[in-house]
Length: 125
Image (cartoon, rainbow, N blue to C red):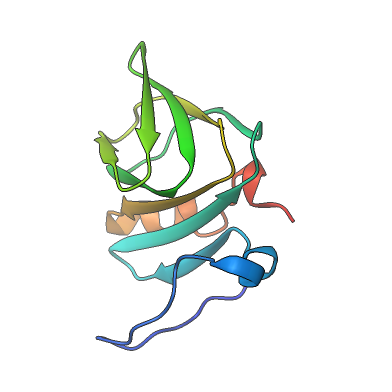
């Protein structure tokens, strides 16, 4: 899974459009010692089993419809909506429609190594 390695203020596309959609896949977009940004491209019906991360996380639905189960609640994220989870909250998700999800994970220096090789099942292509 190659990283884009953007420089500060570089602009790059996170959203597949039209024919490009088939060329886009789930990947780490940015990784620094303090944060990790991942894009998940999830076909309808694809699930990520329950898991937990060691840092606070934001989840933004760029396209589609995602069902998120966290903290005993089920919420739906629609296009342009976002939410956040505290560190160590168990959660799972399912794409109700073809979806693109942007995740930002806040890392602590001791957590950087723990997530260095973290690739959820849904990122496999």
